[in-house]
Length: 85
Ligand SMILES: Cc1cc2nc3c(=O)[nH]c(=O)nc-3n(C[C@H](O)[C@H](O)[C@H](O)COP(=O)(O)OP(=O)(O)OC[C@H]3O[C@@H](n4cnc5c(N)ncnc54)[C@H](O)[C@@H]3O)c2cc1C
Image (cartoon, rainbow, N blue to C red):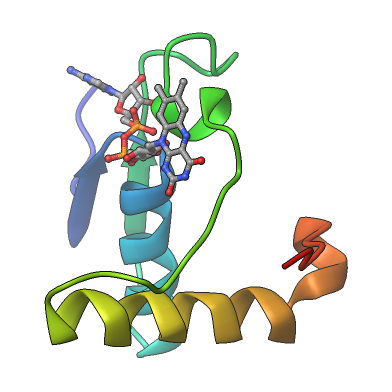
């Protein structure tokens, strides 16, 4: 069986799903995410400690982490995000 899609993202961790979400938000349709490990046993995104910070050396890191933290706060209910510090 073959199927054509506009965008194929390999890996449904935080990076793959963020890209899929951003593309869909910008109106890109037919975004498909594939992953080998649907149980999330090996994905770093499933295993991580959940720590988030914006203290980095490079300005681009600081800006992107701030934007991420703002996103988490905006969607707090969906993620169960609890700012503690
Ligand atoms: C124990 C641990 C603790 C951590 N704690 C923190 C923390 O507190 N704060 C923080 O910011 N970061 C933390 N990190 C780092 C952070 O989790 C990772 O940087 C981030 O999750 C990586 O996301 P990713 O989407 O790039 O990779 P992943 O989440 O690993 O996703 C990659 C996905 O690709 C899939 N895949 C791989 N190869 C294929 C293939 N050939 N075909 C299909 N699918 C494939 C995998 O199954 C996986 O689901 C931690 C990491 C670990 C391991």
